[in-house]
Image (cartoon, rainbow, N blue to C red; front, side, top):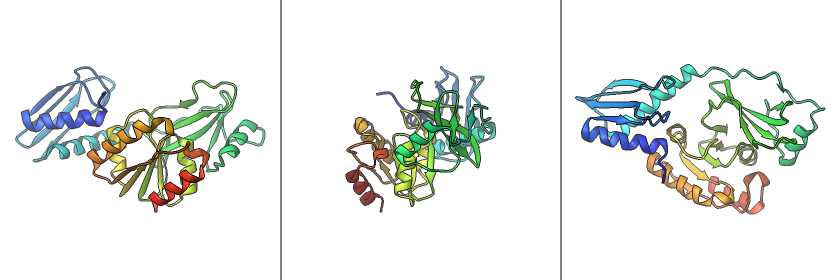
Length: 265
């Protein structure tokens, strides 16, 4: 089984506390043999030499393996926040008007209505902006017209996940539309769409902020649902529950909604 980036980092941390140094592939950018880390006499140093990867840091303390990874994750997040600029909205991504019938047909179909949604008139996509610290850093577009590939399109790729809501209980779902629907059904929670096929250290860092996690991916991802539950509990220690759905959350199947309500309250 392929290791996720956070699993690779934890393995590196274990090596560091045992052997004191590490050299190999970067767990952040995937660079081949470009990453080095040294842990000696209470000083932790790490660096990636790949030109387009800016992961590096130094920390003086006596830390456990888990603490090492926590510091490294925070440094990467801080570096990324400094580098990621606000997304420049393309001229063909506009505020929807009454003339954009495909946009309104799609949003009506799923009953989603949140402020800030846009429409890509060139590729006929409903566009959901993704914000970080109040800035739009990315957006994800869902094809609604004749051009169906790719079904989902990322405009910058800068975001690690999409979240909506401000509750202390986190519901992890398959896609952005399901996240919006889940939040509309349960407004006291936070819903997260992972925006990828694997959990990363960035996901884990975010997940740590919540006191309970429920994973409810689409029915065809039942094995992944169980895998994610194990990974999250192992890495974060947050109580995590996996729920097998009858259908995608965005279809609001009554039995699924009842089960979620029971788990989330």
